Structures are given as C-alpha cells and as structure tokens.
Length: 104
Image (cartoon, rainbow, N blue to C red):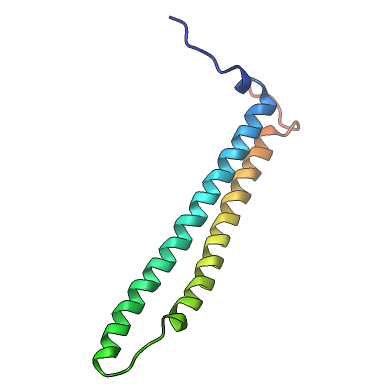
C-alpha cells in the first residue's frame, strides 16, 4: 500500500517556510510558559508572605510584589525566546546554505 504524500511539503522552499513557522510557534509557546511560571511563582510567594505579615498586623500590597515579577518574567521569557529563535533560524540557515558540499 502506498503512503499518501503531502505535495506542498515536497518543495524545499515550502519545507524551509514550515520549519521557520514551527520554530516561531515553539518560541511563542516557550515565552508564554516562562512568563506564566514566573508570575505564578511570584503570586504564590506574595500570598505566603502577605499571610505571614497579616498575622502581625502588616498588610502588603500586591503591586509591590507583582510589578517586579512582571518585569522579571518579561525579560526572562524574552531572553529564552531570543535564544530559541537564534538557534532555530540559525540552524535552518546553516542547513539551507548553498555553500555546503554534498555528502557522499
């Protein structure tokens, strides 16, 4: 039995385009995961610290904790995304360069 072929993926230009789209999608997912994780951990830390402080009559503001967490999350997520995009797009560029000699 013959396997069905995906004709649009047989063109090398389309393969490169699909690879770039997949690396971009991966980078977007990583950005969201890292940013969300930083925010969730900061929120948990705030709730714990605010609970302990409230027992002593001190009330902490969420904005004092979360503003820095948003900034930290943005920069960590962006740095991770930049590394992924640089690696992925660089590897695609390397793989498609015409200067490579054919392997025997």
